[in-house]
Length: 342
Image (tube, rainbow, N blue to C red; front, side, top):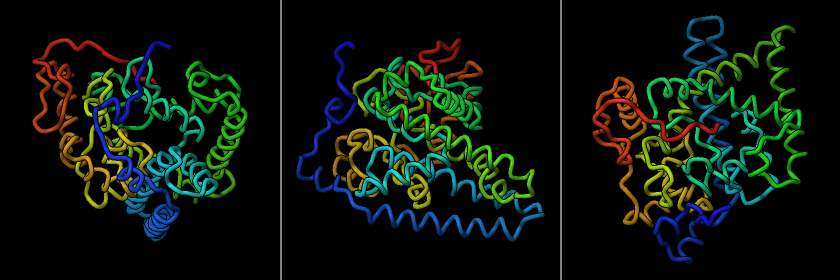
């Protein structure tokens, strides 16, 4: 492999004294358990809304709301536990990783090792194994990404590869040799669980459909709107996280659902910092990082405006969000820079 500097704070020229970083990055079970309790409580409340509206038209908005609270935190918690930072107790961290990855629908060790690769080669073409869309993004790519079906197709393909021991070159590149047996076992168990959910109605059992399957589908677009803005419209092949990654201003609800991962620049600079300490980290290095982009909805609406204009051959300069210079054009044909890797 050619000489390469991993993408992190050092490669980005960001500095934080070791004493402060150690204090911020300390791990504890308590914040993760508190989050788990709040998440469970929110799912109970939205689940009650589904229960009392079953058989009426109101069950669909109830399932959508439940799906948001099911899917976005499942992604966020799966991500945090893949880093091993959600809990200090490793067994607790791994148990939550397994369950949340089941909901997110990705084998947990595949999630961990491809995500480690993503941090090492953040947004580097041909190296980053978690580039979920073609770049630059057009409206067709936006639709494919936001509906969730492109990602679901990729994850199901990975499940089948793992279950049948047909390991891809990417898997072999990012995964320690001794982990493949565990990954195959996990994939087979998870596929069996998904199959049981799918056939449950044949035996008159509908609750997994109303409380898990349909909400998972309905909530996916909101989850993917969160993940889309992490890197879209930013610079590929840069050693600097400041150029490749976006933070955005978060409301209390977005911060809860996304586990403070709206501080995404800060997370990529110091991935060892737990979710609950990301706001503290952001304050500590705010004079070295770009201002966060606008809130969740405004940032996503501006991305959508850009990709629509690009698809029609119009100019693509965004009004308020950060963009890499080569993403700003006056119109005309669009040359693809990178193809999706997932």
